[in-house]
Length: 249
Image 1 (cartoon, rainbow, N blue to C red):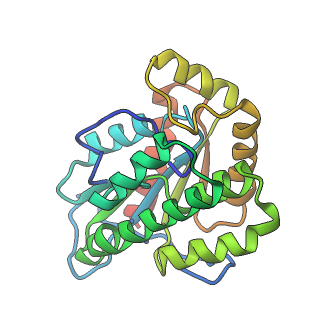
Image 2 (image 1 turned 90 degrees about the horizontal axis):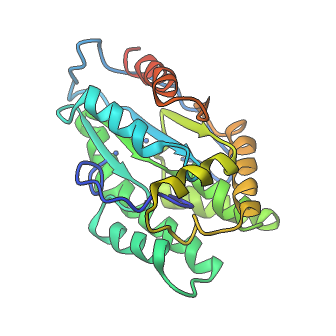
């Protein structure tokens, strides 16, 4: 998570999840495209990069599992940010459970993990013609590290650093699962699992994160915001439709 991904171990999505493009501090625009309805891929065509975003407890893992069950692994790669690579998983552990991390160290670890993920996993997958689906990407930096950590005064600097880390790779589609932090917290508590540094933050932090997501989604390219407070089936119906619209163009 750029802020908080769940700490559950899922062999199907822990190290290979996946995605796409760049700029200089400002947000660029990128068109979405896709694969045919038979869902075969063409190695001569660049794959699609799709990201699932949202605050803690929004249901990102659940939606990704449903997408993976439907689309399978032959033409898709599934990854997470931070994580997805050997180096990234090491950084992820520090970010989720490390002690005494400064805000600056936290930001740099996220960006370093993303840079490695783009170079080692995302770009090679896209060039091969396969699609990649990632649990979190750059929008999390805006929500957690700028708004959550109250770095609005340094927003321009953080945006430039983030653009440097991802290079020319921006998602063809970012699905933002929007949920009130109070509802997200209740869901996390119901799981009864070990919580991360981010999930343990006060509700005010998560309210700022939500604000950061909603504000940033208006400027970031190719974002679809979905109400994640509803049932899993209702949310998946919209998530699935958004993904199909991109890959079947």
